[in-house]
Image (cartoon, rainbow, N blue to C red; front, side):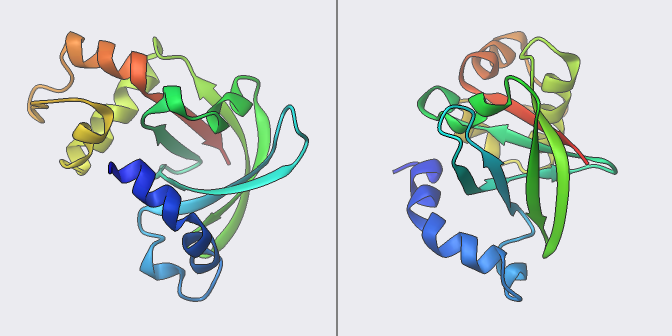
Length: 150
């Protein structure tokens, strides 16, 4: 079982933890994302991994072709976030796989978290060289980036 499927099984436990005073147990790498489904209109809350910048939060989506939630941000939409116990709001949008920000977000994260490239089907990632063109092509096929402007 890969990490995505394992985390999905833990969602019913993770969400309450991330919204509680015990959030510190998981909030170093996970936050909750709450949004309105573009087709269903339902309010949906999911835990996601994130990278925080000053006024932006990036969410890298692995195994994107088997997930649907990120498609809600093909058109920018307002979202609520719970990050390290803090409630935030922002506008989430899907970053084009050809955008420079797409590559930068993945390289930064892979350099910071050396175990993560395998979750995106990237083998032999070299932190000193960054993404090869073949690795970038794999990411463009299997990964997505949702960026939230706070």
